[in-house]
Image 1 (cartoon, helix red, strand yellow):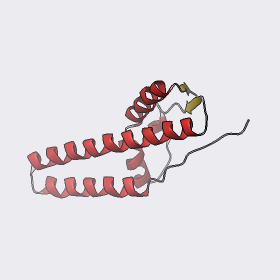
Image 2: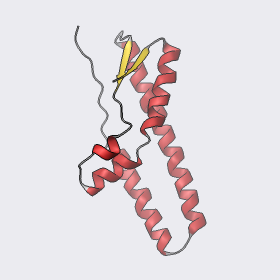
Image 3: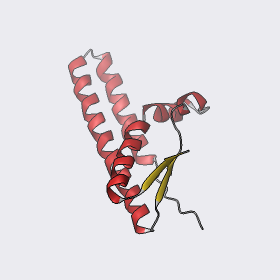
Length: 118
């Protein structure tokens, strides 16, 4: 049996996260802490929405292709294993892997698709 994969490009999310980060840095220099907090809340809402959209696409892809199982890599210690540039590391460290995995698991369960962690 063949393996089917789904790939997401990270260019746009990386750009948006860099934009949020640079904005927070500028606001920090101006000591506008309440505005930074609002910005962080806005970023976390955006990230949660993106995770919902990605998880929906993954589960939809699995259902559309008749797949009965979605395999998830164990990402618990990925932050310690990553040997990347500073910018790539920042994107990796700020991504909410656990939240995305939880969204995939509950949506797959609703669709009758099994989720296995490797």
